[in-house]
Image (tube, each protein chain N blue to C red):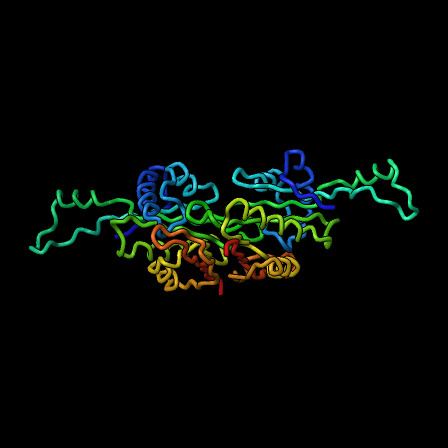
Length: 187
Length: 187
């Protein structure tokens, strides 16, 4: 089960581990692979920013295949799995007269890819942005070759509203296009 | 005559006066009309930023209509006109793997509108960006109703590569679209 909640200072180590893994590949995120822990966490916990984590938590005690309830040692094993598998930040995309449009960034642990963590955080984020009164959400920098991200955001209602030619230096593919994606949060 | 040069600390007062005038109208710039001097100058002189000013300087001594050279008191009057009429900032639009794309912002004094100050700074800025090795220039937030700006940037080779629906809260027109404009600096 996934639990999404506001991050605390005790999540900083876990967030840095995930952040570092994500930028190390130099194929999806604008931050350089050698971004320091200090820079990364300063950005992720910026004063104007709401920071969330997604943590995997053990499900309820269920009957085992043999019909017995799981014992304490099995629960203990499950508790060891209780850890942060993703994080996102939500903020105004611009100050002042552009502050009604939100912006968000997402990171998912390598070990938790393909399990719907990004989608769950995306849905949570849209709901939080609405709750906070934002009128729209904008992603400024979706690398066009990061197809799974583009596809996920389209499924969550985002449209590509702009294309920045060669704006990302991909470690393997060289300069590739970047999309600006946008989604209204009002009717 | 217009002279464009790097800004110094002694230009801060002049820049703040222009900045404040520009944002006061709430029709072109994302900064709120009540942006403080401190916030404005922190943004304009950010560590990662090249800051320039355009100053009006007296032309060479020329013959007056009566055929006499202008006298010293006339020169003194001209020297009183030697002042900052505009400013611009140039920086990387993104960190790391997006740092090859530059970003710039421009402000022109109310008293100097329509005199080509914006165009002169724009051309200077493109030349500086090339000199600094940037591969492109991107404007993230050109308010669509600011037609003279849109037109000027198009004349200087920028294209509208994205439209952000209702991303600017115009003091009079309500939520209006914003353009993302882009220009390559390489062949």
